[in-house]
Amino acid sequence: MSHASPAAVKPVEFTHRQILTILGGLMMGMFLAALDQTIMATATRTIADDLHGFDLQAWATTAFLITSTISTPLYGKLSDIYGRRPFFLFAIGVFIVGSFLCGLSDNMWQLAAFRAIQGIGAGGLMSLALAIIGDIVPPRERAKYQGYFLAVFGTASVLGPILGGFFAGADNILGTAGWRWVFFINVPIGIAAMAVVAKVLHLPHHRVDHRIDWPGALTLILGLVPLLTVAEQGRDWGWDSGRAIACYVIGVVGLIGFILAERAYKEEALLPLRLFGNRTVAVGAASSTILGMAMFGGLMTVPLYLQIVKGSSATMAGLQMIPFVVGIMAGSITSGQLISRTGRYRIFPIVGSTLMVIALFLFSLVGADTPLWQTMLVMVLMGLGLGSNMQPMITAVQNAVSPREIGTATGAVTFFRSMGGTLGTAVFLSVLFNVLPGNIRDAFTSAQKTPEFQAALQADPAQQELLKHATSSDALNDTSFLSQLSDVIAHPFKVGFSDSVHVVYLIAFGVMLIGLVVVFFLPELPLAQRSAQQARAEAALQAETED
Image (cartoon, rainbow, N blue to C red; front, side, top):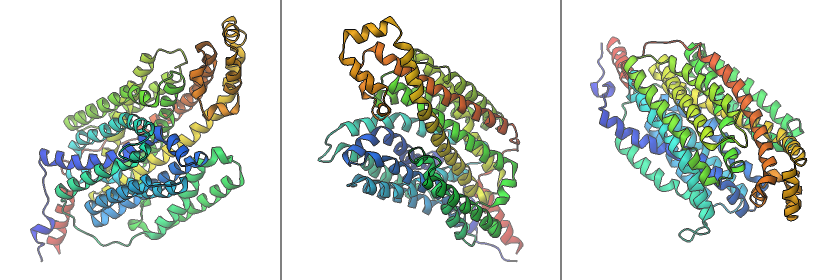
């Protein structure tokens, strides 16, 4: 009988202060990924104009989305085999390099290529941070700490549009075009995050040699690249165009190949199919997909509503989203504390999904004349629902799998949420832009019969020319003309937009109803009292002792 050296497998118990220090480094890494998504929302148009590639701007988003989505499960699996720390540092490093290169871009194609590099880093920032928390904090305490992560996203969703608007609006900062600082700002934050993580994150790792599932990785890329591309570009190409159909066919072939590869690799697969036989993982994956659809697909229209209907600037719209952030933080912190005290988690995704269903229905009732404070109350409700849903589900999935598979399981849930978000964005944007022209025309037709509208036109004949633009197909490409219209004449356009947003929210409401049904199938398992690395270390020590 041979005994392992205690240093090789001895579990480490982290104090609350040590966990918070590590958490600081993880949150800085996650902040990079979260800020990047929101800061680009308000700066993209300025960047596209400056690089003379307005018609190519979607590719900068698509390239980032494809690489970040595909790399997520790869990070999860590889970190399970080789350890989290090197891959998290690698993810931050790649993100920094990609950000710096983006800031140096001379044209839109270069920007898209460098955004793809950024995405490779971003794919590991979220899933690995969640997996590392799973390594060092027992499930019973985990949700309490994971609430901080949602606070990071909340902060980024407010700061992003403000910083994006500031940088995009500045002609020159330190001798460089203002918009380039949208990317350069990631460099010092990323370097600071790397320094903190390198110093404080030292996890014992008992390596187990495995084959790497390269066929699974390659077929996943073959399946997802065309499907994500058509999801982002299909509205411009036409969903039944030759390019779109080719993407569908290649994507389906790739996904079939991926499933066959995963069956062949069994336990060593990138996403072991056996995992989805675990009811908690299956519910978590399905729920995360639906949550991603409802969250991204539904909420992306709120800033549009605030800017177009309420006349807010991009920066002001970011500030007006603060109630949503407050809701997320309140929901995540409350659910985390209650899970820690009671050891029960199942109720929170159910309550969270119920709140989201109610919020999406209330959003569908918001019109052009709805007071802003009412819309903000619904934002709080939506935030509470999201905050009560996302982290408890991650905790449930991590608790339900072997400590050796935490990275793979966390990567899978994050992957499916990202896929749901992409699908939701594609579907809801297509719906919005399909119904929008007709609703705007109908609103103007109704308004033109009113004496107030006719009087406004006669008072200022120049409004007639602007009105032609408001009802043309080009109106949706640039809505700045709304500020030049009188309130009476601009009102029908806002009504048409609000009516179109109603359709989006009603579809999101229906999707979230399905999500509510799905979370009722989530089982309630006792939450472990040991962290994953403690459980792994004890199992390894026992195995070596038995040899």
